[in-house]
Image (cartoon, rainbow, N blue to C red; front, side, top):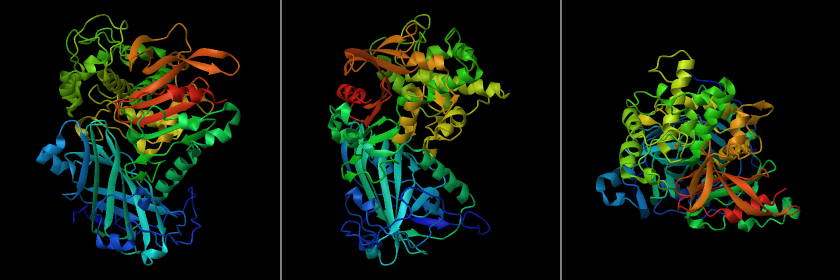
Length: 593
């Protein structure tokens, strides 16, 4: 039997704290009797610490007839990484599974300290953001879970939590879940499995089980944690099954099965449509049943971050400090640019990927260049990553030609951090935290989840530079809120204009004098403006007949897309087979009125 590690609860506070008052959260109070016909992960198996093979993920989910939990579970969860977890590798582009030292690191769950508070049947980690564990391979995100009781568990409560394994220094996400029993003073061994990923180059199932211990204690910040989570939950878009679109909009003659058509469902983690203030969500599949926390799943941003981080940050700065911010020169705010390079390259040039610095103008050839990979994508240290990003030679004046570079979004993010630091009166060596600026100015007011307020950073630590062009982790609700901010809301949160309206209009192809630069994606001609792709497609309008409309897009490596339609609809897909065959889905979404 392999070992998942030990779960140890300890007291954080030196003195006992008063219990945090329960808050109103969705799904509470549970109204079931607890009479659950459980055949998978029964109490006997958890108590014995046995998890010999992956099971259907429904075993980790709150069952329909769940009864309220019998116990309160609050304190600090310590999760110690063990070795030798079991796995089945399904795809391995770089043959990592053939290298024993790498395999040893891959099959070890890193140590975690997870402060948990409880309200009703909800278990909420105090820290739901990306955790820098120091592990050789994995960082981790722990999301809110549930705790309930079943008659077959011998008077114990049963708990589960979503746990996302994140490849260190990279954006791949492995969607897992852990479950255990609790009797008020001790916990059973825990079962863990991750049976789906959003990762083009490395796919596997990973599972394990191990012993636990528990010491009760109330975290001092419990009340604030619960209040913040309740506010976050209340701000989510209402969720309905995607099939409900047909009933909600009968005159549109929408065929829900068209959404996700053209994609290999085995490699499509999540998809859905937002329209009319409702999130119509497709099934969140894994190789072993539907994911038990579809609204909490942490999806990698990859290059959707170029829009949601780099573009949104510059649009906010332009609205707050004036449009002239976009005309600041990059080299004045980036540490140690090479002598003679990047002169005249502005913040907006970098946002448009039009710096005039490149090796090859071919379709994303610079991005695929092995030198770019070795000098920019692989290094963790900020100085090495900066050198790699600044290495492209000067070829022509800026603003003339689009050449796809993730490095441009990184440099822009570094420059905006430097600008914010100087604006705050700090020295040039003390840049501000760009992500905290975004969280304060845009993300929190928009209702973005706490789990999306941390990014991959240089040096694999929380005070590094954010990657800017990739490295975020969204829930479906998060990315829909950002898309709706740009699409239906035109940069407004409530009655407040937070993003520069001119920049939003240009990015959304509503300024005929500023269409952006010519670009190519998936073999199709596009425009690229302010880090947003735009492609014209032919649609059928019930009143105007056939016409051309712009589909504005956030796109990401491996098969990720967020489509913003002129009728206010948003269609998103997160997959990892390099499929971007969204035309049928876009035309279907445009039918909605």
